[in-house]
Image (cartoon, rainbow, N blue to C red; front, side, top):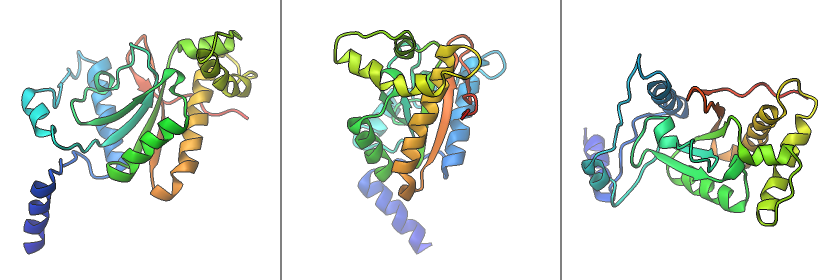
Length: 211
């Protein structure tokens, strides 16, 4: 009992925001359920949790997000909407093509060290950056550097059957997730590979990696 009181005292002292899930897997289940609210609204309905002025006030001095989401900058893929979550729930990093560089890795390192062990790599259907890489476009830098960085995914999936863009989207998800698993192996993280359908709103697994 004394220990419980002590930890409650610490939570109040340091402004700790209790997380709604205890493990990376249960945290992913929350996101999965939230996505169900988004794409299957007739069955589930959106709940819009933690989207009130009271929540804003509650987390004004501290945060405790329960998942990192690395996704594309595309305006049609906002993670808080896609997963039906709210303020303070997700540590979101958005960059075209959901690419990795030192700044992105450093941001994830910060979140993994302080808050959560769940990382979601979320690619999406008809990604414009990947379309440019597949088409062999060479825009001026620095955009050109971004498109060039997606070439490994295009190359890796060039012999996969099906649509070249969607194949490269999936390959890119795997390549990014693989790097994160290696980088944060010692931190005990769970990295989820996921893709978002612009048509349905559903988050699913990418196709399996093909050698």
